[in-house]
Amino acid sequence: MSASDSSLLIAFAGVAVGFFLGEGSRYLRYRVEIWRNKRLVRTELKSVLAQLPQKRDILNQAISHMTQQRFLPMLSVSTVTIGYYSVQESLYPHLKPIERNCLHIIFERLRVADEQMDGMEETFLRTVKEEVQVDPWGTFIGRCEELLTSYDVVAELAQSYLAGKPVDVFANKAG
Image (cartoon, rainbow, N blue to C red; front, side, top):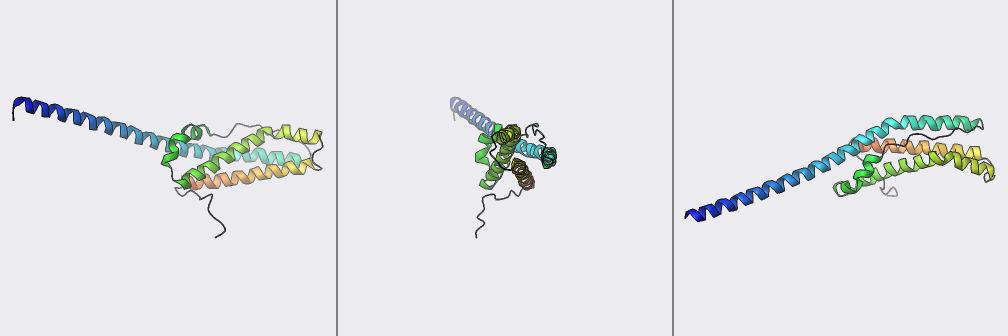
């Protein structure tokens, strides 16, 4: 083997090693990003579980007021969901269908509950003013109780996800 052949071989080997190191590094960063996103969602679920008692307390106070035909505004800090919605798209292909469905139900229930609680006062006042309901107090107590039930479902699903055994939310219950 001549000197020019060995130099060519060394240069080729250097290029190959550089390529594999670069691709290995890129793949490692990619896997670390997936891990970080999953950790972010898990951390956010823990925050949601910590926030649920406050949400339940607000609803229970509102129910107590409504049984006395008084209305308590239910505006509160929105549930923590920013992290999930910021990584949802990039994390989607890396979750099992059961995990995606469980997270979807958790965070959609939270979104709907926040919207309902934030708009409850306006909806209630409009219902009373327009005399849409015969018993608006009973109707809105029922809505608050539905939100409490929804928070129970969220807590159950979040705990199952954090335990590594997400509930199959779309399981066929007929069989």
